[in-house]
Image (cartoon, rainbow, N blue to C red; front, side):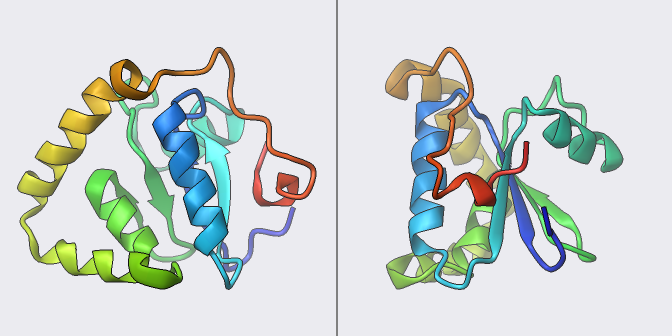
Length: 136
């Protein structure tokens, strides 16, 4: 799979809320910028370890930009919104809020996501037409 120039989104593959968010990103990724991998996958674990992030302690979305940096939690979500079509692009304006406040809200939702939205027994299996966007 060619990843040159692609931004990689690592997400909780068993979380229903996270899977819904990935579907939204795919729908609004009109320029085919993003590729996806679950945090639970070997590729996801490798990407985290290369950035000295402990996979056991991370239940956050992570955005990896080629040659730039990585972002996690609310900053990752808002950085992703920059490249989406429609009204999602305007969410980047929330970056002006202090990260501590943004991440506090993010952590509250993350802590309760399984209770509120449920979870799957295994990671999402993409449809054949979406499979090219996912890294095994």
